[in-house]
Length: 333
Image 1 (cartoon, one colour):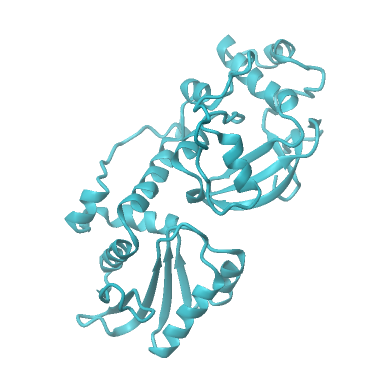
Image 2 (cartoon, helix red, strand yellow):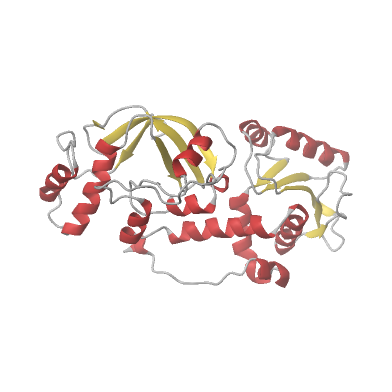
């Protein structure tokens, strides 16, 4: 979708939707194409396809979750519904100007991330001043500004709209795993300030077998954590860690500073740990220095937290209380 400049839905069993210009017509089109589906399921699919083909307007904001990257792509609809012929392609498409294809999930507040977790393919996020907030992100805001004061939490619902996020989650469920991961990331940001986050990162490194020294607050000299191997923590590999708990994206100047401190102290590697994201220039710099400098973003911090949770200090587990729950893997059905 990003490469071809469109958004699409995968209802390959249904042909061209152009003749179905409203919800009843869409339902009539789908009924013979889906003989094994219940009336409720067909109504759900018809509402999604009607929204995609007819209700979405040119200029509307579209958000595409990129689940493998823990990112979101933001764009604006630029064209009417089109049907692409051929097998092994997404047939139903709308042209999109993907203006921000790599927004980190932590840039969006938890309430809207919850809405983005609906299993349904097409949903409308109408609550909590969503259009204003997501529009700000589309326009370049580093973080979701939150709902404006005085704006009602619930928007008026269209008469044929059964693809609002609340309905979609009630009918089809939600990606519980993604929701849980988003909630844990939010909890980390809520419970750990800058210096407290240093302690969490040090605990994760120690769980990986490193010995860590955390300088006193305000006297780090560009070193938030000094990690090394061995009892004394000075055996190779030695790692100088900088920790950034700020909300905004981290720029390339931070990597330049880290590289300078690594060279000054003859360390083997530098590690930047951030709860936000990197600017494009910073990501390019990391790629160019990948044998010298590494980055843990929020997804990597979360992965290591879950990996080592059982051996982390009790004070950390008290701030991030987790409970293991087993779920049926519906994808294996």
